[in-house]
Amino acid sequence: MDKLEALLALRRRHLIKSLERLAFSYEKVKNLPLESNNFDDETLEVWESFSARFARASDIFLSQYLRTFVLLSDRGFQGTMRDFINVGEKLGVIDDAEAWMNIRELRNVFAHEYTEEELSDVFKRLLNECPRVLKLRDILHAP
Image 1 (cartoon, helix red, strand yellow):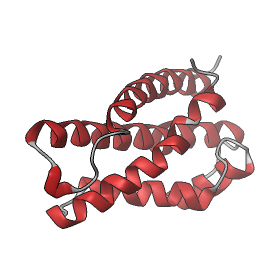
Image 2: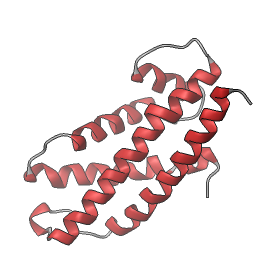
Image 3: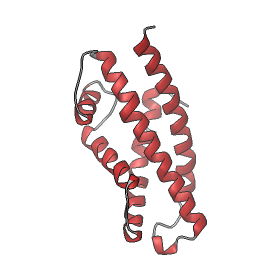
Image 4: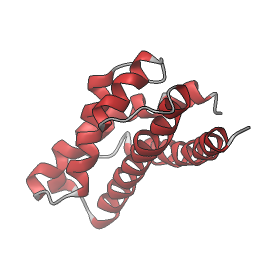
């Protein structure tokens, strides 16, 4: 096993752990209210934990695992995140490049400032995209 293969194995383990934590948070938020005017501090804390775990899992996948996976197939590959995502789709590690670009954009939206009025929309989008992120467990053959 060379260094890149070892790095991919390490990133796979980190991604699986992150997906386990995301799945736990996803189960907690699935039945919570989505209207931000109904959030008490405890509910908001659960939503924010879910959001942070979504961002972490998607970031580990896109910025670490996918990049390493693509480089294993073409060690000289260079490109933008969109290029890596497109190659990932061609290699079959992701199902829809455009959907993953949207997930990346959504992760970036949450990482920046947003108004309380936008909060419900951001949480709805995260909730809708979470099953796609969790589906990575199938690709990784993770429990």
